[in-house]
Image 1 (cartoon, helix red, strand yellow):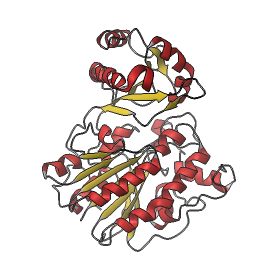
Image 2 (cartoon, rainbow, N blue to C red):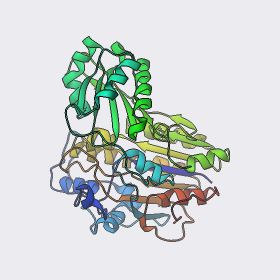
Image 3 (cartoon, helix red, strand yellow):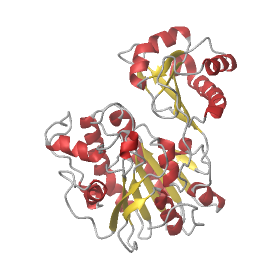
Length: 402
């Protein structure tokens, strides 16, 4: 009896009841991608035509979309398997960021507002940058603004390589991001200065410092690497990771899960460069997961490569690639295992701007003993509560098991 949580990062399904508060009323990541595919607007090098997700549809994705937004997107019409249940959930945390979504999935909603940097140039307080440069022994910084990571690296990467000044920027999320060349600046040196920044921004209630290493020798060849690291604050309460760790259960985390939870109780961490490698790591982790154990995986490409870059065709292809590998996972599950596939927020590639979007998320669950439909849930924490119940762990403080 094991539990597996897969987070399709940013794969929202619209219909959040408080979307208007975030300027996101009408955002619908899966729905709008399916619309674009059906209209022939998402054809790409490897795909064309309607969105094809037979395995996710078999788990109830189309029905979850109907429940969340009042419509089943084109190409997702079908019935779910007899051993699968579908539902959707609205986020109770106040942000639409990665840590809030993941912590709430793990049983801990975020009751406070994160700190954010203003959309000014410069964006960071002078005293923060002065202390950062002094304590991290830096000649200065570049950037100091809101920016897209790929754009600012292309624009400032060459100057960074000649001056050794790191590129510091932020976004609509609660983040302080630091980009540096993996070879000329050094990966360990980047991690070192990120640790300094983490300590300095703690009083500002900023959720994450993100190390963004890149390689290449010109704007045309600069490329971010898989050695990204998030320096996060820990969750404000115990998550299902803490409970499982306290009971000495087998715990395996995949991708950036360890970083998101500040490596508290997240067990053995398996990495992978991109969704395909992360899926392979998930299968490896599942093969090693002991009875009573928890595996928690994040699939990042949907968000970082396609949602934020507003690449509809790439996002559709990533969904289809993920779907094509699902049978490998389904066939590896034991009869008493629980699989939950969900998301942490939306990032509608057809929406204005490049920010996350406030949306409901799907809950697709596979377990032969699940007694009733999941329905529409008030809070992602119901997922954590369900996993705790399935593994016979102590109940979570938040959420109701389905």
